[in-house]
Amino acid sequence: MLALEAKAELQGWTEPALLKVSGLKEFAEGEFPIQNMMLDLRSDPLVRSESILALPWAGFLTDDRITSPLSRPSLKLLGDPAIACVGDVIEIKPAVSKIAVRYRRGDNGNVLFATERCNSFCLMCSQPPRQIQDDWRVGHLCELANLIDKDAASIAISGGEPTLLGEGLAQVVAACASALPDTHVHILSNGRNFEDAAYAATFKDLHPSLTWGVPLYGDHYRLHDYVVQSGGAFGQTIKGLYALHAAGQCIEIRVVLVKPTVERLSSLARYIYQNLPFVEHVALMGIEPIGFAKAHHQALWIDPLDMADTLSAAVGFLDKRRISVSLYNLPLCTLPVSLRPFAKRSISNWKQDYLPVCAECDIKSECGGFFGWVTPEWTSRGIGPVKLEEHACARH
Ligand code: SF4
Image 1 (cartoon, rainbow, N blue to C red):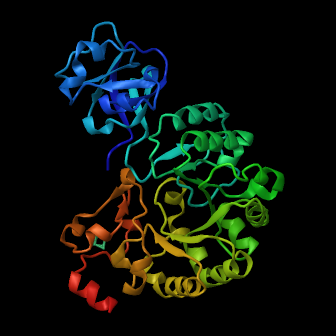
Image 2 (tube, rainbow, N blue to C red):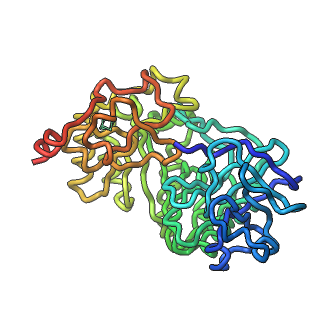
Image 3 (tube, rainbow, N blue to C red):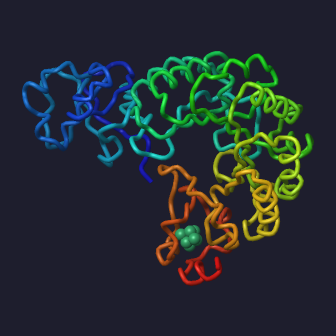
Protein backbone atom coordinates (compact mmCIF):
# COMPACT_ATOMS: atom_id res chain seq x y z
CA MET A 1 0.00 0.00 0.00
CA LEU A 2 1.58 3.26 -1.14
CA ALA A 3 0.15 6.38 0.53
CA LEU A 4 -1.45 9.13 -1.53
CA GLU A 5 -0.18 11.98 0.64
CA ALA A 6 3.19 12.92 2.08
CA LYS A 7 4.85 15.70 3.98
CA ALA A 8 7.31 17.65 1.87
CA GLU A 9 9.81 20.50 1.97
CA LEU A 10 8.50 23.02 -0.54
CA GLN A 11 10.62 25.94 -1.62
CA GLY A 12 9.49 28.79 -3.84
CA TRP A 13 5.78 27.99 -3.90
CA THR A 14 3.10 30.05 -2.21
CA GLU A 15 -0.05 28.70 -3.92
CA PRO A 16 -1.40 25.17 -4.49
CA ALA A 17 -0.66 23.79 -7.96
CA LEU A 18 -1.24 20.65 -10.02
CA LEU A 19 1.98 19.36 -11.55
CA LYS A 20 3.02 16.48 -13.80
CA VAL A 21 6.12 14.74 -12.46
CA SER A 22 8.27 14.41 -15.55
CA GLY A 23 11.48 13.05 -17.00
CA LEU A 24 13.05 13.58 -20.39
CA LYS A 25 10.60 11.19 -22.08
CA GLU A 26 7.58 13.23 -20.97
CA PHE A 27 9.32 16.41 -22.12
CA ALA A 28 10.21 14.91 -25.50
CA GLU A 29 6.67 13.65 -26.10
CA GLY A 30 5.39 17.22 -25.73
CA GLU A 31 1.94 16.21 -24.48
CA PHE A 32 1.91 18.48 -21.44
CA PRO A 33 2.73 22.18 -21.02
CA ILE A 34 6.19 22.56 -19.51
CA GLN A 35 4.78 25.21 -17.14
CA ASN A 36 2.84 22.36 -15.46
CA MET A 37 5.74 19.91 -15.37
CA MET A 38 7.97 19.22 -12.39
CA LEU A 39 11.29 17.75 -13.49
CA ASP A 40 12.31 14.73 -11.41
CA LEU A 41 16.04 15.16 -10.74
CA ARG A 42 16.37 12.07 -8.55
CA SER A 43 17.21 9.25 -10.92
CA ASP A 44 18.44 10.19 -14.39
CA PRO A 45 21.70 12.23 -14.27
CA LEU A 46 21.04 13.35 -17.88
CA VAL A 47 18.22 15.62 -16.76
CA ARG A 48 20.66 17.64 -14.68
CA SER A 49 22.43 19.18 -17.68
CA GLU A 50 22.45 22.98 -17.71
CA SER A 51 20.44 23.25 -20.92
CA ILE A 52 17.66 21.03 -19.54
CA LEU A 53 17.57 22.77 -16.17
CA ALA A 54 17.29 26.15 -17.88
CA LEU A 55 13.91 25.26 -19.45
CA PRO A 56 10.83 26.89 -17.86
CA TRP A 57 9.83 23.95 -15.63
CA ALA A 58 7.31 24.63 -12.89
CA GLY A 59 9.91 23.28 -10.47
CA PHE A 60 12.16 20.38 -9.54
CA LEU A 61 11.73 17.19 -7.53
CA THR A 62 14.89 16.61 -5.50
CA ASP A 63 16.17 14.54 -2.59
CA ASP A 64 18.95 14.87 0.00
CA ARG A 65 21.67 14.09 -2.57
CA ILE A 66 20.67 16.72 -5.12
CA THR A 67 20.83 20.48 -4.88
CA SER A 68 18.03 22.26 -6.67
CA PRO A 69 18.99 24.94 -9.23
CA LEU A 70 19.24 28.23 -7.37
CA SER A 71 16.17 30.49 -7.17
CA ARG A 72 13.86 27.92 -8.75
CA PRO A 73 10.91 26.24 -6.98
CA SER A 74 11.71 22.79 -5.64
CA LEU A 75 10.16 19.95 -3.69
CA LYS A 76 11.77 17.32 -1.45
CA LEU A 77 9.59 14.43 -0.24
CA LEU A 78 9.77 13.51 3.44
CA GLY A 79 9.05 9.79 3.57
CA ASP A 80 8.85 7.10 0.93
CA PRO A 81 10.38 8.51 -2.30
CA ALA A 82 8.12 6.21 -4.34
CA ILE A 83 5.05 8.24 -3.34
CA ALA A 84 5.64 10.56 -6.30
CA CYS A 85 7.24 9.15 -9.45
CA VAL A 86 7.61 10.17 -13.07
CA GLY A 87 4.19 10.18 -14.76
CA ASP A 88 2.23 10.94 -11.60
CA VAL A 89 0.23 14.13 -11.14
CA ILE A 90 0.66 15.73 -7.74
CA GLU A 91 -0.99 18.64 -6.01
CA ILE A 92 1.38 20.71 -3.93
CA LYS A 93 -0.03 22.36 -0.82
CA PRO A 94 2.46 24.93 0.45
CA ALA A 95 0.22 26.05 3.33
CA VAL A 96 0.50 22.63 5.01
CA SER A 97 3.85 21.49 3.53
CA LYS A 98 2.27 18.48 1.89
CA ILE A 99 1.74 16.91 -1.48
CA ALA A 100 -1.19 14.76 -2.59
CA VAL A 101 -1.03 12.32 -5.49
CA ARG A 102 -4.01 13.00 -7.79
CA TYR A 103 -3.04 10.51 -10.49
CA ARG A 104 -0.61 7.63 -10.19
CA ARG A 105 0.78 6.23 -13.46
CA GLY A 106 -0.19 2.60 -14.03
CA ASP A 107 -2.41 2.35 -10.94
CA ASN A 108 -5.74 0.54 -11.15
CA GLY A 109 -7.53 2.91 -8.78
CA ASN A 110 -7.15 6.47 -10.01
CA VAL A 111 -10.12 8.58 -8.95
CA LEU A 112 -11.20 12.10 -9.83
CA PHE A 113 -12.81 13.17 -6.56
CA ALA A 114 -15.87 15.20 -7.57
CA THR A 115 -17.39 16.46 -4.34
CA GLU A 116 -17.69 15.79 -0.61
CA ARG A 117 -21.45 16.40 -0.75
CA CYS A 118 -24.07 13.68 -1.03
CA ASN A 119 -27.87 13.48 -1.14
CA SER A 120 -27.88 10.04 0.52
CA PHE A 121 -26.57 8.94 3.88
CA CYS A 122 -25.80 5.24 3.36
CA LEU A 123 -25.31 3.06 6.43
CA MET A 124 -21.96 1.82 5.09
CA CYS A 125 -20.72 5.00 3.39
CA SER A 126 -16.93 4.82 3.18
CA GLN A 127 -16.64 8.56 2.52
CA PRO A 128 -19.02 10.28 4.96
CA PRO A 129 -20.41 13.35 3.21
CA ARG A 130 -19.87 16.97 4.21
CA GLN A 131 -22.33 19.59 3.03
CA ILE A 132 -19.79 22.13 1.86
CA GLN A 133 -19.53 24.26 -1.24
CA ASP A 134 -16.87 22.62 -3.37
CA ASP A 135 -17.91 23.47 -6.93
CA TRP A 136 -14.33 24.74 -7.36
CA ARG A 137 -13.46 21.10 -8.00
CA VAL A 138 -14.92 21.35 -11.53
CA GLY A 139 -12.07 23.55 -12.76
CA HIS A 140 -9.57 21.55 -10.71
CA LEU A 141 -10.67 18.24 -12.28
CA CYS A 142 -10.68 19.67 -15.82
CA GLU A 143 -7.10 20.81 -15.22
CA LEU A 144 -6.20 17.39 -13.78
CA ALA A 145 -7.69 15.56 -16.79
CA ASN A 146 -5.26 17.47 -19.01
CA LEU A 147 -2.26 16.13 -17.06
CA ILE A 148 -3.24 12.44 -16.98
CA ASP A 149 -1.38 10.04 -19.28
CA LYS A 150 -3.15 9.81 -22.63
CA ASP A 151 -2.85 6.02 -22.57
CA ALA A 152 -4.37 5.57 -19.08
CA ALA A 153 -6.68 2.55 -19.31
CA SER A 154 -9.34 3.87 -16.95
CA ILE A 155 -10.24 6.45 -14.35
CA ALA A 156 -13.14 6.70 -11.94
CA ILE A 157 -15.11 9.77 -10.97
CA SER A 158 -16.46 9.49 -7.45
CA GLY A 159 -17.44 11.44 -4.37
CA GLY A 160 -19.77 12.10 -2.50
CA GLU A 161 -22.38 12.20 -5.23
CA PRO A 162 -20.82 13.52 -8.46
CA THR A 163 -24.15 14.62 -9.99
CA LEU A 164 -24.40 17.31 -7.29
CA LEU A 165 -21.91 19.19 -9.48
CA GLY A 166 -24.83 19.54 -11.93
CA GLU A 167 -23.64 20.86 -15.29
CA GLY A 168 -20.15 20.87 -13.81
CA LEU A 169 -20.03 17.07 -14.00
CA ALA A 170 -20.78 17.21 -17.72
CA GLN A 171 -17.91 19.71 -18.05
CA VAL A 172 -15.55 17.27 -16.33
CA VAL A 173 -16.68 14.40 -18.57
CA ALA A 174 -16.27 16.64 -21.63
CA ALA A 175 -12.75 17.53 -20.46
CA CYS A 176 -11.99 13.80 -20.17
CA ALA A 177 -13.42 13.23 -23.66
CA SER A 178 -11.18 15.93 -25.05
CA ALA A 179 -7.97 15.00 -23.17
CA LEU A 180 -8.53 11.26 -22.67
CA PRO A 181 -10.76 9.91 -25.46
CA ASP A 182 -9.24 6.42 -25.19
CA THR A 183 -9.55 6.15 -21.40
CA HIS A 184 -12.55 4.37 -19.92
CA VAL A 185 -14.41 6.63 -17.49
CA HIS A 186 -16.39 5.00 -14.67
CA ILE A 187 -18.65 7.33 -12.68
CA LEU A 188 -20.00 6.17 -9.33
CA SER A 189 -23.39 7.80 -8.75
CA ASN A 190 -26.49 6.93 -6.77
CA GLY A 191 -28.47 7.86 -9.88
CA ARG A 192 -31.11 9.82 -7.96
CA ASN A 193 -30.61 13.08 -9.84
CA PHE A 194 -31.28 11.32 -13.14
CA GLU A 195 -34.96 11.18 -12.31
CA ASP A 196 -34.60 14.46 -14.23
CA ALA A 197 -34.36 12.83 -17.66
CA ALA A 198 -33.19 16.10 -19.23
CA TYR A 199 -30.11 16.02 -16.98
CA ALA A 200 -29.38 12.40 -17.96
CA ALA A 201 -29.66 13.42 -21.62
CA THR A 202 -26.80 15.91 -21.23
CA PHE A 203 -24.42 12.94 -21.05
CA LYS A 204 -25.55 11.42 -24.35
CA ASP A 205 -22.50 10.83 -26.58
CA LEU A 206 -20.36 12.96 -24.26
CA HIS A 207 -17.53 10.42 -23.90
CA PRO A 208 -16.82 7.43 -26.17
CA SER A 209 -16.27 5.07 -23.22
CA LEU A 210 -18.33 5.94 -20.16
CA THR A 211 -20.03 3.66 -17.61
CA TRP A 212 -22.21 4.62 -14.65
CA GLY A 213 -21.87 2.46 -11.53
CA VAL A 214 -25.18 2.81 -9.68
CA PRO A 215 -25.91 1.07 -6.36
CA LEU A 216 -29.14 -0.83 -5.76
CA TYR A 217 -29.66 -2.50 -2.39
CA GLY A 218 -33.08 -4.07 -2.67
CA ASP A 219 -36.00 -5.04 -4.85
CA HIS A 220 -38.33 -2.99 -2.64
CA TYR A 221 -38.28 0.70 -1.79
CA ARG A 222 -38.31 0.10 1.97
CA LEU A 223 -35.12 -1.93 1.90
CA HIS A 224 -33.18 0.33 -0.47
CA ASP A 225 -34.32 3.53 1.27
CA TYR A 226 -33.32 2.05 4.63
CA VAL A 227 -29.80 1.16 3.48
CA VAL A 228 -29.25 4.60 1.92
CA GLN A 229 -31.11 6.31 4.81
CA SER A 230 -33.09 8.47 2.39
CA GLY A 231 -36.84 8.36 1.78
CA GLY A 232 -37.82 8.26 -1.89
CA ALA A 233 -34.34 7.21 -3.06
CA PHE A 234 -35.43 3.88 -4.58
CA GLY A 235 -38.00 5.48 -6.87
CA GLN A 236 -35.58 8.19 -7.94
CA THR A 237 -32.79 5.70 -8.67
CA ILE A 238 -35.04 3.41 -10.71
CA LYS A 239 -36.35 6.38 -12.73
CA GLY A 240 -32.75 7.52 -13.09
CA LEU A 241 -31.64 4.15 -14.42
CA TYR A 242 -34.35 4.26 -17.11
CA ALA A 243 -33.36 7.83 -17.99
CA LEU A 244 -29.68 6.87 -18.27
CA HIS A 245 -30.62 3.95 -20.50
CA ALA A 246 -32.75 6.25 -22.67
CA ALA A 247 -29.70 8.54 -22.97
CA GLY A 248 -27.67 5.65 -24.37
CA GLN A 249 -25.49 5.24 -21.26
CA CYS A 250 -23.73 2.04 -20.14
CA ILE A 251 -24.83 1.04 -16.65
CA GLU A 252 -23.36 -1.20 -13.99
CA ILE A 253 -25.45 -2.10 -10.93
CA ARG A 254 -23.41 -2.22 -7.73
CA VAL A 255 -24.71 -4.18 -4.76
CA VAL A 256 -22.81 -3.95 -1.49
CA LEU A 257 -23.27 -7.23 0.39
CA VAL A 258 -24.55 -5.97 3.73
CA LYS A 259 -26.73 -8.19 5.92
CA PRO A 260 -30.18 -6.73 5.03
CA THR A 261 -29.37 -6.78 1.31
CA VAL A 262 -28.04 -10.33 1.37
CA GLU A 263 -31.31 -11.46 3.00
CA ARG A 264 -33.17 -10.51 -0.21
CA LEU A 265 -30.36 -10.97 -2.72
CA SER A 266 -32.22 -13.61 -4.76
CA SER A 267 -35.20 -11.25 -5.12
CA LEU A 268 -32.89 -8.42 -6.11
CA ALA A 269 -31.23 -10.56 -8.79
CA ARG A 270 -34.68 -11.41 -10.17
CA TYR A 271 -35.70 -7.74 -10.03
CA ILE A 272 -32.63 -6.71 -12.02
CA TYR A 273 -33.26 -9.37 -14.65
CA GLN A 274 -36.95 -8.53 -15.03
CA ASN A 275 -36.84 -4.74 -14.77
CA LEU A 276 -33.32 -3.68 -15.72
CA PRO A 277 -32.27 -6.18 -18.40
CA PHE A 278 -30.28 -3.47 -20.19
CA VAL A 279 -27.56 -3.24 -17.53
CA GLU A 280 -24.11 -4.24 -18.76
CA HIS A 281 -22.78 -5.65 -15.53
CA VAL A 282 -23.72 -6.45 -11.94
CA ALA A 283 -21.02 -6.14 -9.26
CA LEU A 284 -21.71 -7.88 -5.95
CA MET A 285 -19.31 -6.28 -3.51
CA GLY A 286 -17.88 -6.99 -0.07
CA ILE A 287 -18.15 -4.07 2.32
CA GLU A 288 -15.35 -1.53 2.83
CA PRO A 289 -14.95 -1.37 6.64
CA ILE A 290 -14.41 2.34 7.08
CA GLY A 291 -16.46 5.51 7.50
CA PHE A 292 -20.08 5.03 8.61
CA ALA A 293 -19.75 1.24 8.31
CA LYS A 294 -17.69 1.16 11.52
CA ALA A 295 -20.63 2.53 13.50
CA HIS A 296 -23.07 -0.05 12.05
CA HIS A 297 -21.09 -3.27 12.28
CA GLN A 298 -23.87 -5.28 13.88
CA ALA A 299 -26.50 -4.21 11.36
CA LEU A 300 -24.26 -4.71 8.33
CA TRP A 301 -21.67 -7.45 8.75
CA ILE A 302 -22.30 -10.89 7.39
CA ASP A 303 -19.43 -13.32 7.03
CA PRO A 304 -19.01 -14.34 3.36
CA LEU A 305 -19.09 -17.97 4.55
CA ASP A 306 -22.65 -17.42 5.73
CA MET A 307 -23.81 -15.98 2.43
CA ALA A 308 -22.24 -18.65 0.22
CA ASP A 309 -25.53 -20.34 -0.76
CA THR A 310 -27.36 -17.06 -1.39
CA LEU A 311 -24.43 -15.67 -3.35
CA SER A 312 -24.14 -18.84 -5.43
CA ALA A 313 -27.86 -18.70 -6.24
CA ALA A 314 -27.78 -15.00 -7.24
CA VAL A 315 -24.61 -15.33 -9.32
CA GLY A 316 -25.94 -18.50 -10.96
CA PHE A 317 -29.29 -16.83 -11.72
CA LEU A 318 -27.71 -13.80 -13.43
CA ASP A 319 -24.97 -15.73 -15.20
CA LYS A 320 -27.46 -18.22 -16.63
CA ARG A 321 -29.43 -15.31 -18.06
CA ARG A 322 -26.29 -13.79 -19.61
CA ILE A 323 -26.14 -10.81 -17.33
CA SER A 324 -22.45 -10.28 -16.67
CA VAL A 325 -21.78 -10.59 -12.94
CA SER A 326 -18.63 -10.17 -10.82
CA LEU A 327 -17.65 -10.44 -7.18
CA TYR A 328 -15.60 -7.58 -5.75
CA ASN A 329 -13.71 -7.20 -2.46
CA LEU A 330 -14.15 -10.85 -1.40
CA PRO A 331 -11.06 -12.94 -0.52
CA LEU A 332 -10.96 -16.15 -2.57
CA CYS A 333 -10.70 -18.49 0.42
CA THR A 334 -14.10 -17.26 1.67
CA LEU A 335 -15.83 -18.24 -1.58
CA PRO A 336 -17.02 -21.63 -2.82
CA VAL A 337 -14.67 -22.79 -5.57
CA SER A 338 -17.48 -22.50 -8.12
CA LEU A 339 -17.70 -18.75 -7.41
CA ARG A 340 -13.98 -17.98 -7.55
CA PRO A 341 -13.91 -17.42 -11.34
CA PHE A 342 -16.32 -14.49 -10.79
CA ALA A 343 -14.06 -12.79 -8.24
CA LYS A 344 -12.01 -9.81 -9.40
CA ARG A 345 -8.96 -8.13 -7.88
CA SER A 346 -11.07 -5.05 -7.31
CA ILE A 347 -9.44 -3.17 -4.44
CA SER A 348 -7.36 -0.19 -5.58
CA ASN A 349 -3.61 -0.72 -5.14
CA TRP A 350 -3.27 2.07 -2.59
CA LYS A 351 -5.97 0.50 -0.37
CA GLN A 352 -5.12 -3.18 -0.83
CA ASP A 353 -3.25 -5.47 1.56
CA TYR A 354 -2.94 -9.08 2.75
CA LEU A 355 -2.90 -10.69 6.17
CA PRO A 356 0.19 -12.53 7.50
CA VAL A 357 -1.58 -15.85 6.90
CA CYS A 358 -1.69 -15.08 3.18
CA ALA A 359 2.08 -15.63 2.91
CA GLU A 360 1.42 -19.41 2.88
CA CYS A 361 -1.31 -19.23 0.24
CA ASP A 362 -0.77 -20.68 -3.25
CA ILE A 363 -3.38 -18.46 -4.90
CA LYS A 364 -2.33 -15.15 -3.38
CA SER A 365 -1.46 -13.71 -6.80
CA GLU A 366 -5.05 -14.32 -7.96
CA CYS A 367 -6.65 -13.04 -4.76
CA GLY A 368 -7.64 -9.40 -4.21
CA GLY A 369 -6.94 -9.63 -0.47
CA PHE A 370 -8.28 -7.01 1.90
CA PHE A 371 -8.75 -3.32 2.42
CA GLY A 372 -5.67 -2.08 4.26
CA TRP A 373 -7.79 -1.00 7.24
CA VAL A 374 -9.56 -4.33 7.78
CA THR A 375 -9.87 -5.38 11.44
CA PRO A 376 -10.65 -8.79 12.99
CA GLU A 377 -14.34 -7.99 13.43
CA TRP A 378 -14.62 -7.47 9.64
CA THR A 379 -12.60 -10.60 8.79
CA SER A 380 -14.20 -13.88 7.77
CA ARG A 381 -13.62 -16.93 9.96
CA GLY A 382 -12.87 -18.74 6.68
CA ILE A 383 -9.59 -16.95 5.93
CA GLY A 384 -6.79 -19.43 5.45
CA PRO A 385 -4.12 -20.45 2.93
CA VAL A 386 -5.36 -22.36 -0.10
CA LYS A 387 -3.29 -25.17 -1.59
CA LEU A 388 -3.07 -25.20 -5.36
CA GLU A 389 -4.13 -28.86 -5.59
CA GLU A 390 -7.33 -28.30 -3.66
CA HIS A 391 -8.09 -25.12 -5.66
CA ALA A 392 -7.49 -26.84 -9.00
CA CYS A 393 -9.06 -30.21 -8.06
CA ALA A 394 -12.23 -28.65 -6.76
CA ARG A 395 -12.65 -26.72 -10.02
CA HIS A 396 -12.74 -29.95 -12.08
S1 SF4 B 1 -5.36 -16.80 2.41
FE1 SF4 B 1 -5.13 -14.65 1.85
S2 SF4 B 1 -4.32 -14.69 -0.26
FE2 SF4 B 1 -5.14 -16.72 0.18
S3 SF4 B 1 -7.22 -16.69 -0.61
FE3 SF4 B 1 -7.31 -16.18 1.58
S4 SF4 B 1 -7.23 -13.95 1.65
FE4 SF4 B 1 -6.55 -14.58 -0.38
